[in-house]
Image (tube, rainbow, N blue to C red; front, side, top):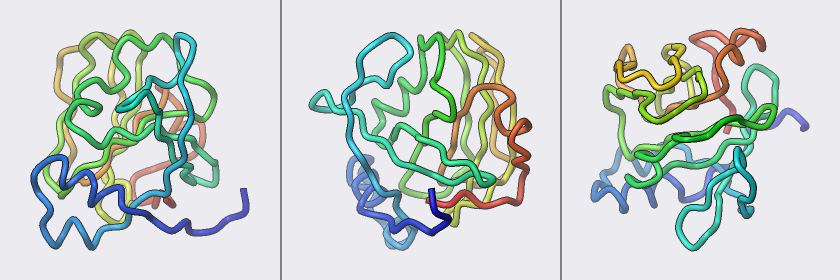
Length: 168
C-alpha cells in the first residue's frame, strides 16, 4: 500500500449515535474508511448487522493491517471471542464515541492477543499481551478512544511501540 493518510468516514459519529453519545468531541475525531466483506469459515471475520463484516485498512509501523470494525456495544462485547486464529496482519479495531479509560478481558477467547490502546489521534498509549481465556482486566494507561487487537507477539515482531501512530 502506498504510504498515505486515509480519509475517515462517519464511523465514529455512527458509533456515537449507536452508543447514545454524539458529543462534539466524538465528531471531531478521525474516522476510519470502511470496506465490506462477508465472513465465512471458522477464524474468518464474523458478520455484524445485516450479515456484513465491516473492515478498514490501517498502517501500523509501516505494515498494512486489515481490521474488523467493532463500533457498536454488541460488536465490542463479542470482539474476537471463540476465534481460533486470525489471518496474517488481521485484527479488530474497537471504536468508541469518546476517550475514556478502557478495560478488556479474554473470556471465551482461546487465542492469545496483544492490544494497543490508542488516543483520538491514533497515537498508541500502551500495548499489552492478553492470555487466552483470562478473566483478568487489561487496562489503558490513560483515556483511549480506540483499541487494536492483534495476535500475540504481532506488535513486537513488527517493531511497533507506544508513541507510534496508527494511520487510519
